[in-house]
Length: 257
Image 1 (cartoon, rainbow, N blue to C red):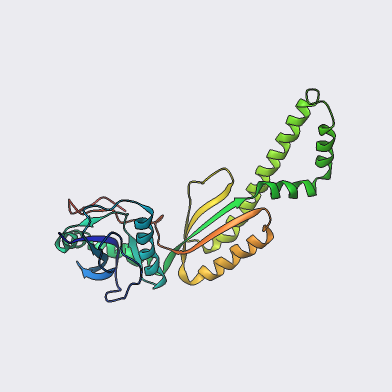
Image 2: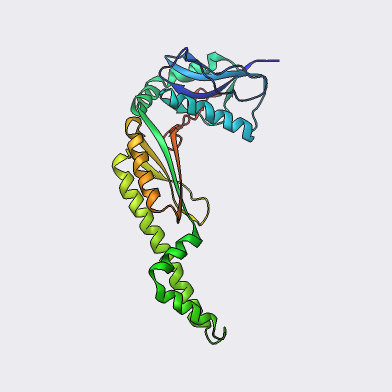
């Protein structure tokens, strides 16, 4: 079968580095960092004609990029599924855009992406609200003992008041956390929320040397909200949300970053 090349990303260094992460595809060769076109390309060989975006393959792609980050190798992450037939094709593309790619790598040097997601526990949050507003609890108890039809409007009003407080508390938590992490962020992007219980889902571009301090800040926030909030903190992450190389290998032209 014809040997092809799967590409994970572009770097400015790292040639000869040993990679432990598994390759994408079946009957794939080891992940290598090869000098091509004046830069370095992270590749592995494979015999597949195409790569399906199944969980096994997408995880392998991500793990390679994450390993580069842990080795402190700056990488322009490639979109999943790029396969090319020979090294001469990739060399033509890299050479034609070497200056721009090198500038972008220099800009990202020493920086990582951090993912922060905050989801609230509705039941716990309502318990906290009730604890601070005993009068609201008393109103709720009184309404439960009255006729539903006669108390309908009062029940609706109480429910609306609770929902407003839930929104206010969540917005306050969001604003507080954003204020705490702002000094560490070179850039930040809000990402699409995964469900109505998500208070914040954000990607932060930070200097790798200050990431431990950022973690401590987020951890401190988490400890004050350990009952009503669940916080996910992912680092280091390749800068997917701030740059992604989408080179058009077939046409040897760049589509953009």
